[in-house]
Length: 76
Image 1 (cartoon, rainbow, N blue to C red):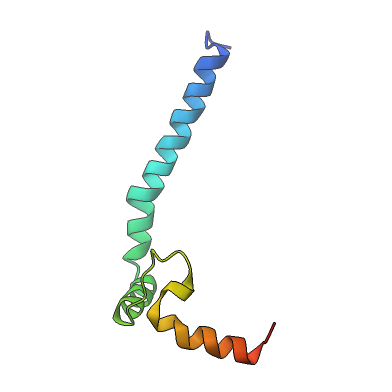
Image 2: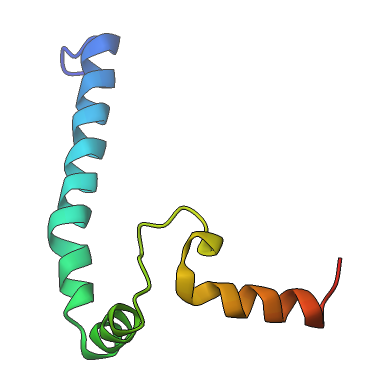
């Protein structure tokens, strides 16, 4: 090795992973969101009032119909 101790190597790997995550979150994902087909899906969901931050689709008012319909089609 070039003088890096094991703990330094761990930190270098951590910082590389954190930097990669930061680049994906701040550059790649917004770029994908501006793509016409993705923008169309985002606009559609917003117009329907679908909240992408919901933990479960059953938390969304607009999904209650679909959930009930699916449960009738495929009972447990």
